[in-house]
Length: 232
Image (cartoon, rainbow, N blue to C red; front, side):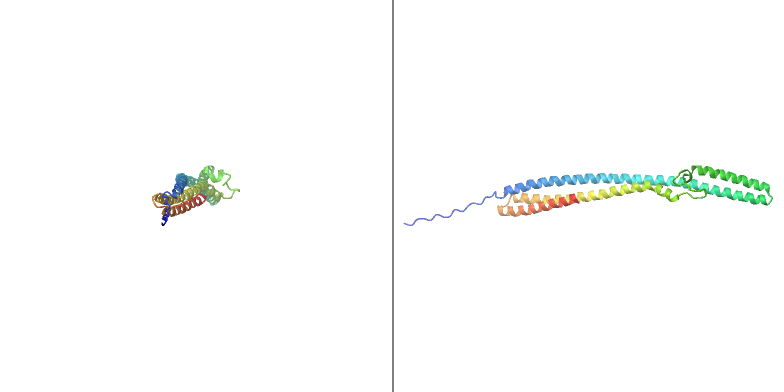
């Protein structure tokens, strides 16, 4: 009597194989996505603040330039009046002297009187001129000239300081705006990882493992990219 040989029993494949791994990777991707989203929001907020500061500084620069123009126009007008009246007084005094030497005493007196009037106007203009009542610009000698270069440097200094501040704020805005855009790209890569992990849940164990590897690669690449952006 022949004994029957039992047929080999085929071990059934576990359909839930690698699912816990995919779930863990999905949770990890969620955490990384939340962190990157927070970094993107922070970059956008900082960019908005820098953009606001840049615009405010630009308005302040414009106002300072307008004030500087008005102030310079007034100072130069007073100084020009002083020079004109001083020269007129000198000319009238020389004319009076020549007329006196020529024997025309009446014309000499008239010219001298006109010279005194011009000199009085020059003295008044000198009192109100910043080039003579400010020690930073006043001549160092009686026949010297005011320090115009120091006046120009001091006048333009506030506008230059505001312009430097505005340029720095604009540069910060560009930097944070680029970071915000880069974080958006990182979130797009993480979305791909989410898609791969979600698709892996519905496939066979072998394909599930393959998609999990692809998703993990996307997750690691996105994480490394986010670190580079953060440290950049």
